[in-house]
Amino acid sequence: MSSVSKNWSESRQYCKDRGADLVIIKTEVKQHFITSLINVDRERVWIGLTDINQEGTMQWVDNSTLEKGFWQATEPNNDRGNEDCVELASSLPPLNNWNDLPCSINLKAICEK
Ligand code: GN1
Ligand code: CA
Image (cartoon, rainbow, N blue to C red; front, side, top):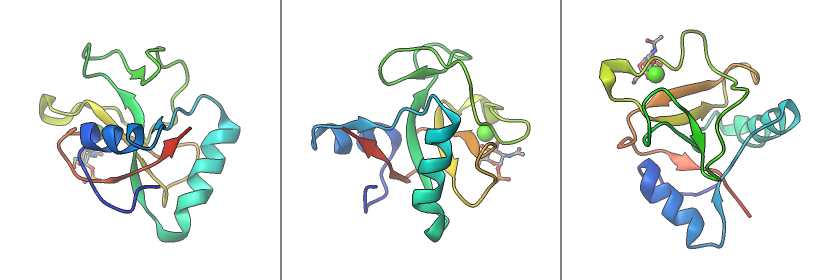
């Protein structure tokens, strides 16, 4: 996990500078694992998911399309038409803790190699 809060693009660059990328979560096992890693501090972090390329189509940073999401109730809601990047809020139930947020918000991030 990055120790500094940055916007989504800067967070992605932070990971790339370390030979990694923002985390991709395609299974329940991994979703539980990532949540448990950070919920000691109830952190909210960027993950490698965005619909910045095409509104309404969530894509992982490996360019694959989202198949299964672990969304909070009523998310993603693209609030004010301005939410294209996805956070994981670790204090919420592991299978329902994603939310879309403005990509300009500063959060910590989870990188993976
Ligand atoms: C709302 O309630 P809060 O602040 O955690 C909103 C989210 C937005 C977020 C933007 C239920 O979340 O969708 O992304 O504000 N939640 C609801 O800060 O509308
Ligand atoms: Ca939202």
